[in-house]
Amino acid sequence: GAKAHRIWVGTYEIEGKYPFLSIPSSTFYPSQCQHCANAPCEEVCPTHATYYDKNGVVQIDAQKCILCSYCMVACPYDARYVDTRTMSVDKCNFCSDTRLARGLKTTACQATCPTKVRIFGDMEDPNSEVSHILRTKEHFTLKAGIGTEPRLFYIK
Ligand code: SF4
Ligand code: SF4
Image 1 (cartoon, helix red, strand yellow):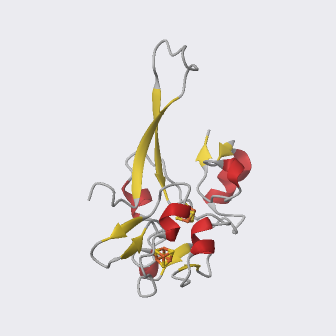
Image 2: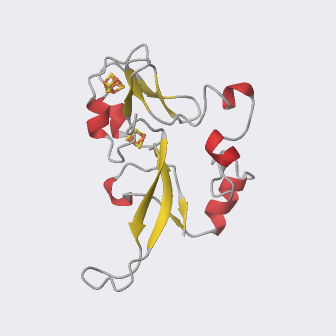
Image 3: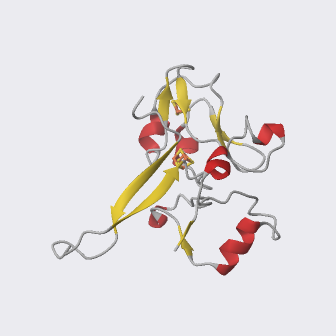
């Protein structure tokens, strides 16, 4: 369905302030579940269907989900939707049950991105490409002020 996407591409204005938008200019940003270190979705889930796995990835156990939709309301990034095939809530899980489970080191979105916008990796490994980029390039997170501590970073 139209709203059932694990990832999406948004647009926003980047130049000028209303009402002085002389030549509207927009940029694109891919987005998805931010895998927050302080995730409101995990906090409100009454059945612990939403949980952190050993890698710190926010996961959903479809068997435990009772479709109360608390997590959908709590998520500030609108990252969750109802998967009508499993009748549970779903979202990006960093390909944990597919590619990573098969021993691959990349997510599907990273592997297929034609311009290599996306980089996925282990932030706790100081030698990973992700760690190197976070040390050397200016970056930001979405809605940084609300305390969710996203682990999806955007390079400026
Ligand atoms: S982005 Fe939303 S669904 Fe993902 S961890 Fe954060 S609060 Fe949960
Ligand atoms: S819809 Fe499922 S995952 Fe979300 S809060 Fe309710 S039980 Fe937890």
